[in-house]
Amino acid sequence: MKQSSDFIVLTEPSERFCFSADPKLIGGLLPENVIGTYLLSYDRRPFYIGRSDACLRGRLTTHEYLNHASHVIWEPCKNHAQAFYLECYWYHELEDSGQLINMIHPGKPNGTDLSCPFCRCDWNSALEQAIGNPPTELKDN
Image (cartoon, rainbow, N blue to C red):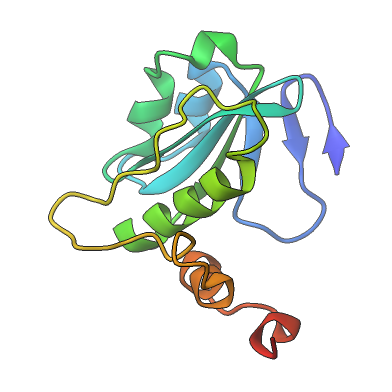
C-alpha cells in the first residue's frame, strides 16, 4: 500500500478505494448511481460505516460527518444485497472497537427481507454473500 496526502493506493487488486475526504475529489472520481458501502475514517481509524442503495457519490459528497473524516473508503457493489452484507460485515468487525459513532446495526435495503448472516454466526456463508466466493480455506471449515 502506498500513501499520499490525497489517497491511498492499494497494491493488491481490489475494488475498494480510499481517498481524502474531499467532496470535490469524491465527486470527480466516483460515478453517479453506483451502489456501495463506505467507511469514514480519521487518522486510519474508521468511525462511521454506511452504504448507499442508490448513489454512493451523492451520499458521500453530502455526508454529515465528511468534514470530520480524513479519508473515505468505498467499495462499489453489484446489488443492494451485496452492499448490505458488506456493511454488516464491516459493522460486526468494528462493533467492539469503540471507534464507531453509528452503533446501530445496518438496516436491510427497502423492499427486501434480507437478514444479517453475521448475526446468525454463519461466517463462512456470510463472507460468501458479502464478497463472492470465499477463499478455499474458509470453505473447508
